[in-house]
Length: 217
Ligand SMILES: *[C@@H]1O[C@H](CO)[C@@H](O)[C@H](O)[C@H]1NC(C)=O
Image (cartoon, rainbow, N blue to C red; front, side):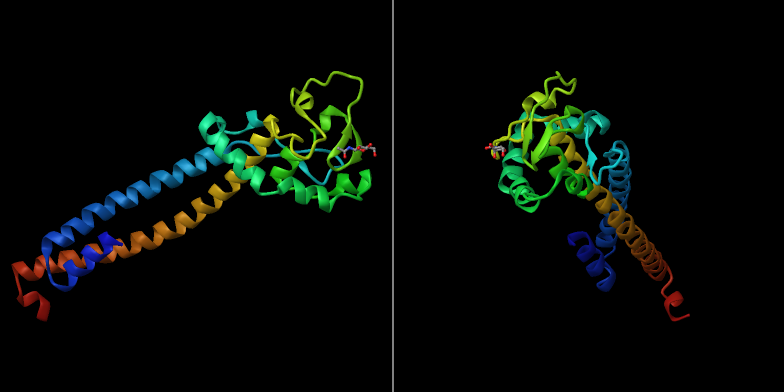
């Protein structure tokens, strides 16, 4: 906004140095915007929920997502903040209430959000027995997925320590970033058009200064 204001004053009051400032800073901002948008696309390109056969929901594995996002999200300080945020959001309490009286077949058809799938139920490959959406009985086998041992039927625990919880969050983050990146592209195109107009204005301004007879022609 400040840069645009500088450009506006520069154009209206014919202050050449302000126009210069506008053009230089604006070109830097546009380049920065393009770099950020490419980065956002690159980071959100990798990883997606895994579709399971005969399930309405997908499951999420932390290792599928970009290393950069994984590092940022699993960083202890960041994760503590995200974790308390997720706990406050009552995602799993809502999930528990919504599917409380659902039969297993109906539950399998449920369209769960990434966070619900990752946090509020054990992974499918644990092969736990369904009692309720947040109440599962362990089988006898020793599942390979380490998340299975972290599951607890307590509503305050569920799969909150699981890797799938982080994966569900990253998947959510990923979709938001994708949207931001698309909005960014539209915004950048608009900015570039306005910038080109600004460049023309600047050129005319200089030309008028060099040869004022041009402005009347
Ligand atoms: C899970 O279901 C069983 C059987 O209905 C019940 O005994 C148990 O208390 C339930 N556990 C929780 C945490 O709700």
